[in-house]
Length: 110
Image (cartoon, rainbow, N blue to C red; front, top):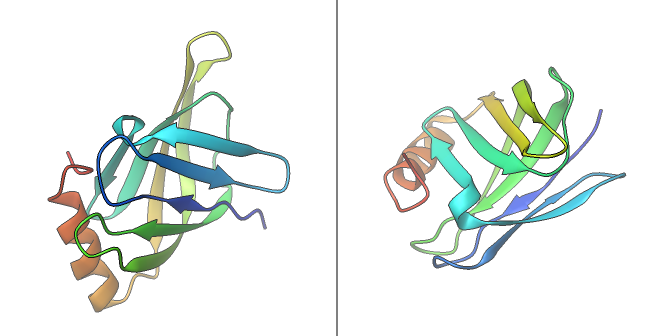
């Protein structure tokens, strides 16, 4: 299993870090969209579909962390224009769903 970590800071303009054993990406908050059941982001590196990921998000409202597990369901693009990565979260608790819904309603949501 591959683990990646995304941390979002309290305001716009802060970086988001995506990590794996082979890759570390620093992404702007403008390249991330949080949905109620997943996340989409632009990446200079490709991710294989069905890759299991662990994501740590930090709420821009109260800086509280949220740990989510999920899988990459789509990755399209190329090395010249970048990749659009879609990930669906699995096994969210009711509390996690509520916090993710609040993040989706913030400036990071669509």
